[in-house]
Amino acid sequence: MAHFAEIDKNNIVLRVMVIDDQYEADGENWCNNFLGGDWKQTSYNATIRKNYAGIGFIYDETRDAFIPISPFNSWVLNEDTCKWQSPIPYPEVENDADGNPTEYYNWNEDTTSWDLVE
Image (cartoon, rainbow, N blue to C red; front, side, top):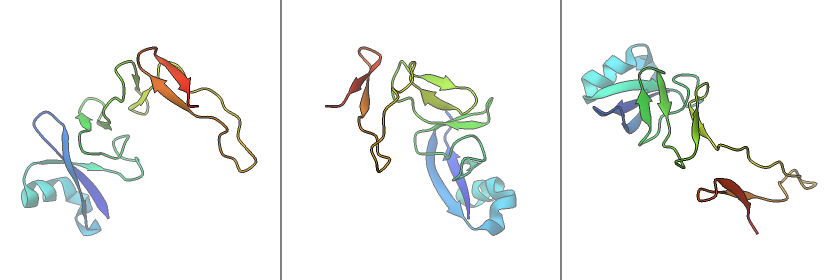
């Protein structure tokens, strides 16, 4: 199955559709003609246009990428992946015997730091 995202005049993703593989080769035109609107192909495994499109994502024509909504104002866009990153890395944590983290952190936008979840 092929995946296509409809974008509005501001390049915001409105919806994502799955169409039969037989239409993939000319899928953007097929969606434009059959469904109306402006469509861009996206990939569930992120091999096309950096990220799988989601409602509210922005299609950046210059980067030819779908960019998610920034989770926080302080986070910066990674130009290679087109994903948002915190200005400081997530703390390193130990794992228990089952491989699960022994502690968790939440981002604190007020202090621009990671807070330990008690």
